[in-house]
Image 1 (tube, rainbow, N blue to C red):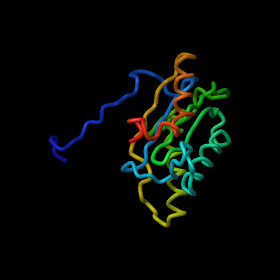
Image 2 (cartoon, rainbow, N blue to C red; image 1 turned 135 degrees about the vertical axis):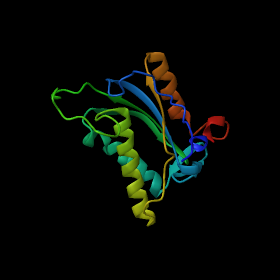
Image 3 (cartoon, rainbow, N blue to C red; image 1 turned 90 degrees about the horizontal axis):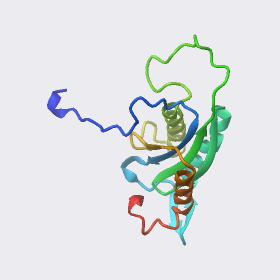
Amino acid sequence: MSEQYKFNRRSIRLPGYDYSSAGAYFITIVTHERESLFGEINDAQMHVNALGRIVETEWLRSPQIRKEIELDEFVVMPNHFHAIFIINPVTGVRPDAPTHLSGPPSKSVGSFMAGFKSSVTKQINLLRNSPGFPVWQRNYYEHIITTELEYNNIAEYIVTNPQNWLTDTENF
């Protein structure tokens, strides 16, 4: 591909930050082409459909698969997903354990999001009989929560997201 056609995606990641560090994280994942796949908002409440239930189920299964993950507030919206989760300190990691040759480091925000998005996509495409069809946009938004005030503001944003659907310009 010629240099003039390469697209540079601006990274929102903090340079040098270890995204496998223990702490609280806020994520938003948006559907491919912002398509409303997961249900609809009626009377300021989110009503998930079968695809939205897959998102909920896979999210709630996450701590069973990834022992370092603790779930907090989350909401499935028609065309996106918001959540807060905590990465707890990992114990028993061998210093000589093999490292990944490609992809995000194990037990990191990136590996968690890759696994979650992949699992949801597989289940949805199985249900829709549409193998290989994208469900999510290529990336996701993440934010490291560093204060209690920040946590409280983000948690309130998540909980009230369905009520603000019609007036919130962030809701696409």
